[in-house]
Amino acid sequence: MHTSRGAQVVSKNKHERRKAAAEAEGLLVEERLNFEAWRDSLETVPTIKVSPSCSATRRLMRRACVALVASCPDTRGELLS
Image (cartoon, rainbow, N blue to C red; front, side):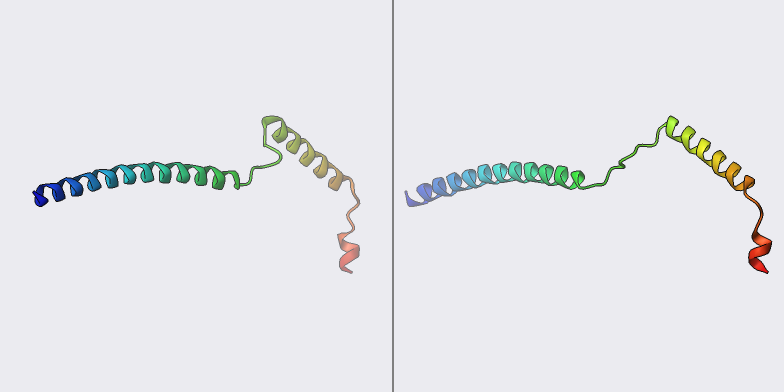
């Protein structure tokens, strides 16, 4: 009689441990997802997003700079002498 009672206790304990293990796995998954969301929130994001209008502005500024440099007198020869 002790053997069958012992087997019942062991079976019940195994069942309770499996149930607790399943709950723990669920908690681990939830915490992993929370951690990954937190880690992803630390990634840097550009303050100014490059858009087509930004590219057009950049091209316009480049042309203006080139025109300004072209309009300046050439003083390289004087600087090197």
